[in-house]
Amino acid sequence: MTGPGPVAASPASSAQRRIHFLDQLVPDGAVQNITRALDLRGDLDVTALHLAVRRIAGRHESLRTCFATVDGSLRQLITERVPRLRVIDIRDVLARHGAPTTGLVRALTDQETTRAFDLARAPLLRLTLLHTAPHRYVLLMSFHHVIADAWSVDIFLTELAALYRAEHTGEPACLPEPRLQYADYATWQHRMLRTGRWERGANYWREQLRGAPELAVPTDHPRPARPAYQGDSYRFAIDADVTARLGELARAEGATVFMALLAGFAILMHRCTGQRDIVLGGTTSGRDRPEVEQLIGAFVNMLALRIRLDGEQSAREVLSHTSDTCQDAYDHQDVPFEQVVAAHGEVRRPDRHPIFQVVFQMITEAAAELSLPGLIATVQEVDRENSTYDLVCTVARTGERFTGRIDYDTDLFARPSVEALAECWLAILADLGRNPDRPIRELAPYGDRAAVTAVGQAAPDRVPDVAALAGPAVGDAHDEVLDPHGRPAPVGMPGELWTVVGDRRTRTGRLVRQRPDGSLVPAYLPERPAGAADTLDATAGVDATEAPIAAIWCEVLGLAEVGRHDNFFVLGGHSLLATVVVTLLQERLGASLSLADFFLHPTVAGLAAELTGRPAADEVDDDLAEMLTELERESR
Image (cartoon, rainbow, N blue to C red; front, side, top):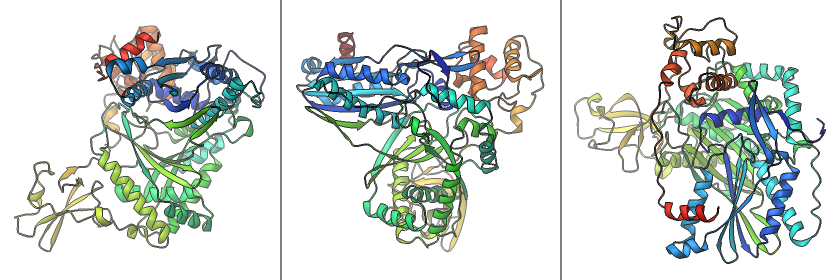
């Protein structure tokens, strides 16, 4: 890679195309926002802060970048538009309303977190400084993921501290100039893609994922046809003694602490699904070249980690297999995830992510405090209110301290179920470290939260018709919720319902969860992928309304004709071609159509019906609307 200097436009990188595509699935959404808050106490030099931001934007072109589709190809455009530091003094509003500071700051933070970016307009970074009290400030930083990743945010904060100090004191910042810009990396990657550099790696992933099943994690609610990507987070601590024992075990097996944690998580997924073949998503920094380590940009790549296990394996054997799986994945981590998806050949579905819906990752967190002259500066991560996957389990490591967070799709999971998952995982990790040679089916006795479900008389919200399966009721009749190994499932965890009458046990085939009060509620399995029935009558001719749509399909797919019920993705279409189709429909037909609409209706007939109109979006009310409106008016 070389750095010839600033450019006006360049190809988008593979990661940028993936993130841009996901952003288009949720028009006016904020799923790809990365938000941090910096709490500042002391005498803040606002001018120095403003100048420091401008200097960072001058150093990193990605902070001045926007995107446009040119001839069906996504391009990144480097502009001279630098991020603006917006200052809002909320002290007068708080005084007029007699409101607590915390509530308004939280409302403004939530507002910023859920505010969408227009990817066609630079900059894709917003900075808002809230003046909350004398010598008290909160700096809200919101990056769009298309121009930054978590590593990039740490770089931004490090440079912000150095450049603020330089502007405030007049001393030099001593920051080395970037050797490259992100556009140089994207151009290099584009050239590698055109030369087929990753074909061998793509072949590895094709074989590695051949026949891989979908991970069927039971959910609390049926999966909606159109995801809303609404989410929440559950945070928890991981005992230091547990991670110490896992570290010792990992070192003895030539593995890492991450691999031991992942092995425990795979055991958890095996336990709650009964599956022996599990594919989890993982992440890699994508910064395997020293030239890009200090660049701000979207480098992160996704990995598919396929782990096979059964109840007779020991925890040590699962760790060894997990270690081998990770090492093989790392050897092929440079293949962009989009190439992996294409090699796998999975038909895209509008209601889920390709290849995997559950992600496990570990991050190393930077120091929580920044060194700023005259200030106490503390970095605060902002909880996400959205989720791009069903479940994302993140382990954060700060020195020798580990904490966990599970981000979950609230359309699928209730918080008690996520809490139960976390608790079961922690129990598995503790037992894995103490008893690595024990078969995994015997790991982690459930303890206080686990008990055979004996609920007595049927409650109103119990699974219906269960009693009828057991025959006439007798005095010692009860129900049990069992895991795949026939052991009692913990409260909140899915299991199969069995009815017990005397010495006779009868399985019902029903998947349920037990609530803390002893009542039972259904657990839902993912629906099976659409099969051949979806393409019936696919050869029927299109009518006059559908003809222009079919013509665009033929042009993009390189086909002579398409049927009105042909599935775009079965015909060979993929996410990037879908973006081209949507753009052409908008340009040529004036169609009001989003990428999400296209995925939901991937046939010519379905699109034609969808374009007849759709209901208006719901209005959202805010309890703090009056104060927020005042601040918006005063800050203009």
